[in-house]
Length: 117
Image 1 (cartoon, rainbow, N blue to C red):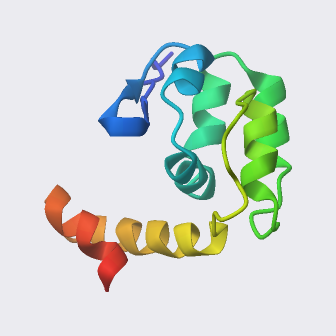
Image 2 (spheres, one colour):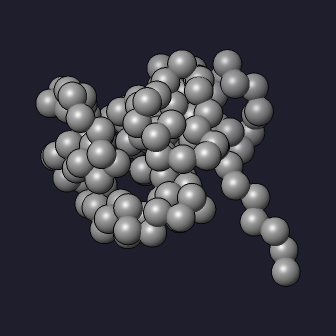
Image 3 (spheres, one colour):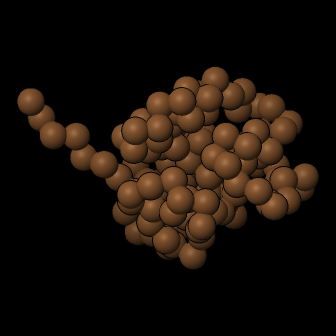
């Protein structure tokens, strides 16, 4: 049987959450969590870290919901984060551009510039 490779979630200031949900709560970055929700990495990370209830709740979310940021905070158990002025659709578009660009280059500087074009 093949061994499954677990990947970290990138959070605030480049911190990589590798082991548990407490790392995600401590180094929480709403925009990065929303981007990882849209690219599917958040659900996979939750499944890989034995949090199937959270993974199911994340999978059931509507990516176009106006209160997506607030719903993610509730599911992940994060409090005190301002979610009113977060534009989930803008984050989704930026993540899609970044994913497309990453097919052509591995240069992180160019991938980060995807949001400006």
